[in-house]
Image (tube, rainbow, N blue to C red; front, top):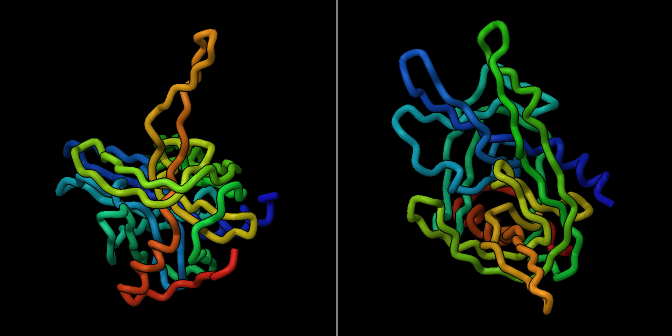
Amino acid sequence: MFVKAIKIVNQAIFPIFRWEKISASEARIAVVGAGFFINSKGYFVSVIHIFDNPTTDTKFLYLGRLSDEIQNPQLEIREITRDDEHDIFVGKLETKNRKYLYLADKIPHIGRSVCVSGYPLAHITRNTQGGLEVSGVRRYFQPSFVLDRALLNSDNGAGKIRKHDGFLVRDVGLFGMSGGPVFDTKGVVVGVQGSVTQPRISKNAAGRSISVENAVAIRSNLILDLLKKSSIRANFLGKL
């Protein structure tokens, strides 16, 4: 169902790396989330919370559309605008990309098939030349469907509360999938991975229980509103 859509998204999604210097001879690097291109001029969308709490020694980097293409030299991410209340980040990279994604201007209906994407379980090592080995940074896709509308206050772990306004997706996104596009069977972005719900417990009469969590996607028309306000060109589709 999502084979063609995944081929489209593959060409526009990338991991976002956080690099921090921790001593004169040592630095720490990790994948903190994902972004996706929205036009051919290097503009992309992600979520703000993966950029939270930087220090003077923090950089956010683009290393390419892994695992297909590696960017050398690596590029530093530049912020263009943000909607801090709704956790939406728009950045720019000094690169020309020919492939980008379309955004839907309507929220998907309950029951609609969607796919969650991102870069969880990233494995980064050093190679023999002292550079980064990033072959273990790979995209993952989780087909799912829309359960319901959602409006969730999300805590970034440092006391900052943001409003994730969108819809519930049945399957939970893993760490590293924040900011990844949630898309339909045509490869059109209907939302962006924002957070997961707090665990809820389902119990039966015999006392057995199941812990349930769901992904919360931020609706794509909020992204379009921010882009329009900032005069940033993006492509959208009005019919789903």
